[in-house]
Length: 501
Ligand code: UDP
Image (cartoon, rainbow, N blue to C red; front, side):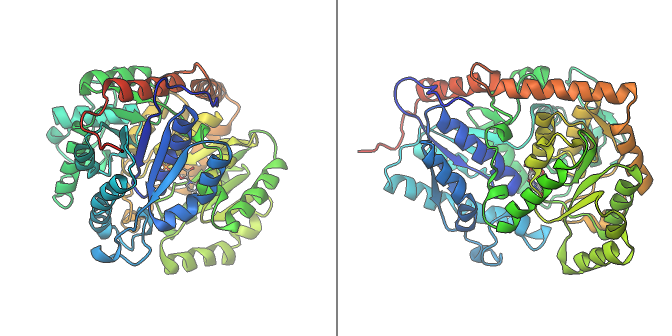
């Protein structure tokens, strides 16, 4: 990545407001580095425990002359009934506390505005997570443009937008009745149950969903973690249908090779990374399957058993990032790993990681040849960057849409074949969705030597090359970023911005 100054005249100051969840903060840290490398001053809004996690990254930015600073604000957990120190979405005790969590983050608006005014920071513009809809009022109060960052790619955003407008999903006869997503260049079918939470018919979070939607519709543009070569027709269709400028500036994981979660905080994480790399070094090129379901999902022990037995039956060496919800599930699953002899049988062939896995490091290792993934957008892009084909097992959110993109449109993944969602926080209710045989079949299919598998690997490798080119000097994403900085600071220049004297 170049560190040239992409902006002429004046130094833009960008305030980044992430949603406090790992998969939303990780790309925003990458974005902070990228913006600073093109000449911007960046203030990243965060909370005490998240700041501690990012400390090393921020120090390294300073060390390399990048102007990235953090604005640390107290997270009002106590005021909304969350445990003290609960500052991330994946830490909330139950899904029913999501509303409390979002309310707490909304309460940061006033302290943030005060801090910006007191510190005489005059932002040129704000980039905020779509989930931090409260920044709409902040942008207005400061008189500066506000761009919305989605954790989604353009394909999923376009599907979502078209469904919001055309409401095709409402004419489906049931949750499992397939219908064609309207307004796409290709025919894509989904069911209502497979759509993101924004389409849930439950009234539970309706007001919050409405605020998020309004926050998107009132934004001055979208910033998307993707690259135009990955989904060109969907980038342009999204611009046309929403009437908003879409700035594709990814893949951000290529701009932040040292994710804060991999290198900071617990020593355990970096130890794990070096053990893991040493183990991978001893494996044949392209032979290892990596299995992980993201930062939020916690599959129930009964389903984890099927994953384990499927990995074993595939005959491939594997790395498996295991996460359970609660002590009871953890005990139950650990005893299965031990008592049933799984760990013993797979010694040397299977590398188990309890907790946080150094995912980008693993995927980028040449020994890894396949990724069993839940199709979270970050994971999907990280796999694309590494040129690793996927076995797609979507769980919730927009993951079924991402599955359609990688399986049907890009041809870089095989579908596990899961039809129903496993809702975050309610994984136990879903029980066993995928059997060991289905896991094994998909993995064998993914890694075999047949024509289809070879073609899949070739396409994945080509996209990885395109991803790298996008973030090089003159590449599409870097060019977009320079243009973004110039356009927002010069053409959308704040008319009533807070004046720093
Ligand atoms: N991640 C990781 N180690 C883990 C779990 C997740 O590094 O053990 C990272 C992963 O690399 C990705 C993010 O966390 O950057 C997960 O984001 P994604 O959008 O794939 O899924 P989500 O966590 O939102 O379900």
